[in-house]
Image 1 (cartoon, rainbow, N blue to C red):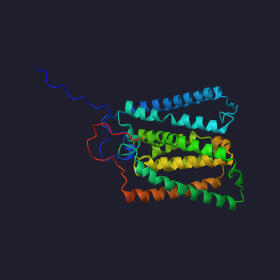
Image 2: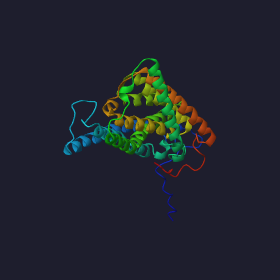
Image 3: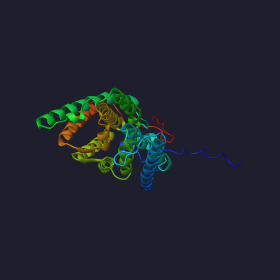
Image 4: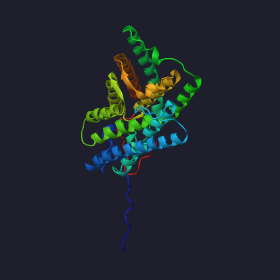
Length: 322
């Protein structure tokens, strides 16, 4: 008499087939206000979660007897403790981005990962040795340029103590992947796709994301251009390869080696403060990025890495493989 009730509709709806990474927010449920409201909530949530973790770290650190520092560039006198709290404060914000995509845009959070709706682990792991090799070549180029210009770079190289080296490496291996992924999902994921919901070209999102990424750091001088170039190139690479796997791999390698070697050399405080960077380092970054981009694009083409959303029924939620 009353008929069969309609089946319940899924909360999330994925993108249509054939969309590039920057357009994945254009689902059938897309409305102009969803990326706008979502961006406000992502920014507010990111700041709130970061503040909560930093404040909690200060409280816990104080209870455990770690000395605070009056400087604004580091929280604790012990740089290892500052490193832990800093990485956690950034990494803990990752669920905010994924949650807003699910709650406000009503799309599978995995669409922030790649065009196939999940993080492609095999592809990302393949990019890791490429990132390592590119980093080594970039360091060699930077060292040669420093030597040719008569600059001394020995102050940042050395070996302090085994305990600090091992501790620093353990912390970076444990927390840097979360911290790097969090930044990538925000600046190369959410920002690019929020702009892509309205505009055809990915470049506004790429450039705004790179600017936001740069503002998150405390570098000065050439360091600003260095970080901005990294953000812009990895943003373009995310669109070109259809996901965040290559940017995350490069970001993780950079930070693991940066913090790990700084711990070994006893210069972790300097790494946390960031500050000025010579133009010679910028040239090294250019070599690193060029090598990484070329090799990754060649591998992506040979392996047939997906660069657009696949065909199929997009109504059911896509799996989120983090």
